[in-house]
Structures are given as structure tokens and as C-alpha cells.
Length: 131
Image (cartoon, rainbow, N blue to C red; front, side):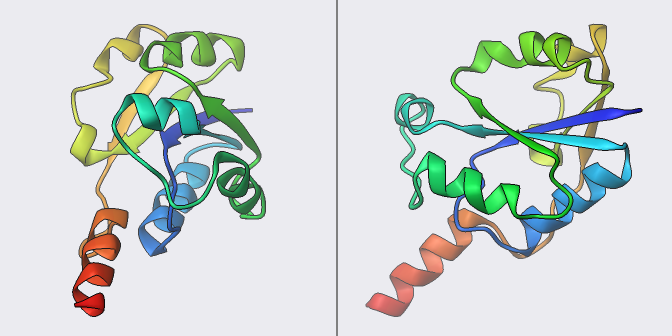
């Protein structure tokens, strides 16, 4: 069995999120999604619209996702890879090179993001509509 892991906030779920989850699942048998806790988002200066528990519930309902775990800090990735016997770490290409240190523990893959969609873009578009 090949275990895959990916990380993100996964707020305001959109087609780009589904695409990366689908493609990550296609690369293995078991997909773990680590989502940023509300506390970790605060440390990063981010505020998700949905709470951690709501984002977790939404992700658990997606057929590609086998397990959802919290991401509480930047440093936990090596521990997660070892704890869950991860074979493949997957992230969007905008993070390319940032997690290459994990290649000592598992395969690392950066997937192209879906063009024209992001949570940031959705938030910006909503601000424009409100003006």
C-alpha cells in the first residue's frame, strides 16, 4: 500500500482543492490530508473562514480523502511522514523546493495548481462584489 500526504488550510473549498486531492489520491492507495489548525493559522497571520472542525468535516466527506489530521506547526512534517509511514509527500507547485528536505524520508512531488482559482482569488472577488 502506498501512503500519500498533503498539507493545506483547505478553506473555501474549490475545484483546485478537489483537483489536487484527486491527483494525490491517484498517486497512491491511502491519502492523508493535514489541515492547518486554527491556532497554526493564527501564528501564520491567516484567518480561515471555516473553523478547523468544519474544514475537517468537509474534507472527510470527500471520496479521495482517507484520513484528516491537524497541522499544528511547520516542523511536524518529518514526524508525520514517519508516524504514518508515508511514501509520497504532495504539494502544489507554488511550494516547489520548500519541502525537498523530506526527500530523505519519502518521495516529494509538486503538482501544478489549477489555473485561475485559489482561496485568495475567491476572497478578492467577493470583496469586489461587495463594493
